Image 1: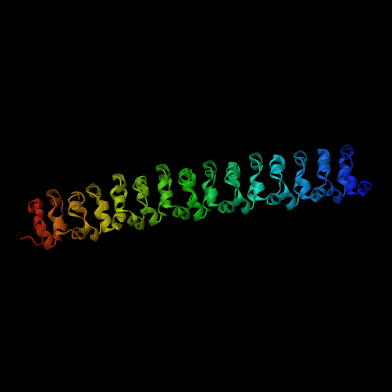
Image 2: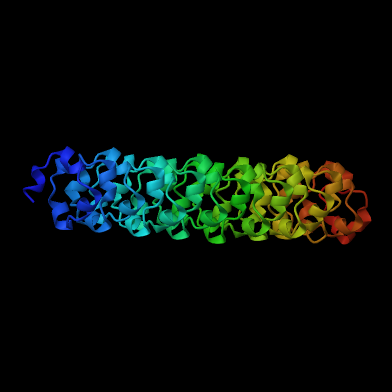
Length: 416
């Protein structure tokens, strides 16, 4: 061994291929690092796989970038995990795309996290699908955010669902809007609620509507209040009936006024009665008059008296005849005096004889003489003695059919 190391680099490089290959792995392993680093690319590739196995980690680490870059695929594939993990950053980054793509899955699988992070973004993106898929969850989770950010859409979509699961929330939140927008539906559906809830507002809003629409029910129901309120109006309106109805009442309550006011009639009509009944006062007043007038009867029936009482006079005035006629006694009790005053005579005509007697005297006091004048005989007959006793002179004078009151006429305070 000592004699071998007494050779000059020129002498070592002039040894014939036959004689070089005659060296045992022990002899090869004993060659000094200065001589190893002086080996020509030709001599280096003459070494047999057994001799390559015999190289120590120190010898491999002494190879120049040029030597390593010229190493044949056969000999490169012979490097052990220990040898590979002892490569310097410069050596790793000196490997060609071809060399990286031909590394065995075993070699890739055994790359240390530190060594993996010495890869350049180009090298990482040049890993074959097989080698990319060979990365373990631990390896993938250890990749730096700068390398994750540098992954092409192709590389990102070549990750297995198991690898997507392994991405840390920090890695996911480092993805660019373009990467997220180009993520395959399969991999998008693999993101956990924890991963999704760590997306930034910009990331969430960059996801295309097709992708948003293909989120699983588990993913949708797992979105926290911040994420729900950060959805764009377009994203909310793009949700299918099934997905929209998957949202919990707690999530519905997180929709901002701007999101609610931007809801299309179709989206609004897709909300369940339970979801509608949980809308807050602020959300109710955000609804457009068109939205309100387009509510299904079952949806209107689901509104609480509190919700009815929060409607603006403009919203109340937009309710059509069928809407007014559909009001339940409980809902009608939610109408404020201001709202009662805003009712048109056409709307007053639609108040049912079931609803009218349940209205408070204060609510009845909100009706104008013009409103009183359009009440039908059936409606007049439904007025209670208490309600009649609270009518003011102008209202009494507006009564069009006193006979309809029957014996209750005696309760009119200003009846002559």
